[in-house]
Image 1: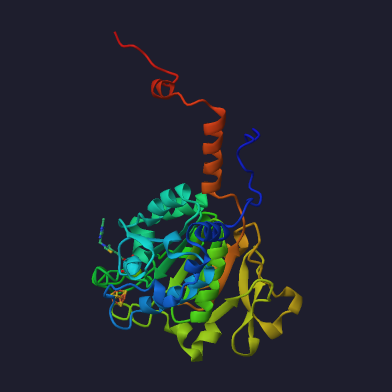
Image 2: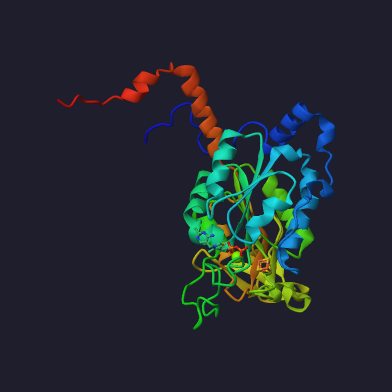
Length: 368
Ligand SMILES: Cc1ncc(C[n+]2csc(CCOP(=O)(O)OP(=O)(O)O)c2C)c(N)n1
Ligand code: SF4
Ligand SMILES: [Mg+2]
């Protein structure tokens, strides 16, 4: 195998301050520390919020506005890029920089921004249609490149903005305006998809669970590289109650598996159920009193091999039974933006700039 050139990182731990530290340092340098003392109200805008009353997007907006100030980043150093959809109206309601961009292209636009302005805290807000239908290709390539940004994927399992067509996360058999006899498509599991692209940070949270959502957001924000957070979001107009099985206190504890790094995967009323390894390298659910405690899997979000996190993502079925919630995977790998900056430094310092030579290239002919 050819050795990497000296200016290219191998896949070890990235060096230097985290993006948040860099953004804070710059913000303090430019604005002084006082401007970073934000409150949730400082992040609200004067825009009329156009979501339907009762939409899950409101609670996510509130959670994000309450949480972001704790990062200590100035408003002008935060950017929220979205695509198209109800969820993608998010930047209007955040008093930060932002861009309501093109359908499915938010990760591409955010990639350009994050790569050229590593001092910024870059966030993408997208929906299940925006991210996984028209934007599927952009999403997977951003994840594999590990560009430094946090992607919030609001999954309501429906196209909300266009009034209720089925989406790539709708269940098989879903009856909608565009599938009057029931959807025939097998849905994407967004986290399995992301892990298949070797995403370095993958998490899942519920819109109405302020504590759980904030906890995942914090870990995602601190991550160096692309963090994907799937947020189950209720669309009370076109897909109401989609996540009630997990939200209802009577059933939620039975079917949700809380993920905490270093803790055994025991869940359900009185810890009656647990996660153990199956015979084929995957995971399966067992009754806690039927297995040796040593067999119970201890959650390790930092495992380098994505196979474990992938197996976790496959525990849940379309009907949401056995749904892990929390951080599935959080590993460090060199980021695209840092490596690109290094290449640019090398190009600037080691190779004299010669525009004519660049335009002519190495191979050219004169046609007579
Ligand atoms: C190029 C293009 N194709 C299709 C549309 C129509 N369209 C707008 S939003 C949307 C899907 C939105 O679904 P999702 O991303 O799940 O967002 P939600 O409204 O559910 O939050 C579609 C198909 C469009 N605006 N532009
Ligand atoms: S259509 Fe659904 S997702 Fe869109 S604003 Fe209304 S409730 Fe929210
Ligand atoms: Mg949607």
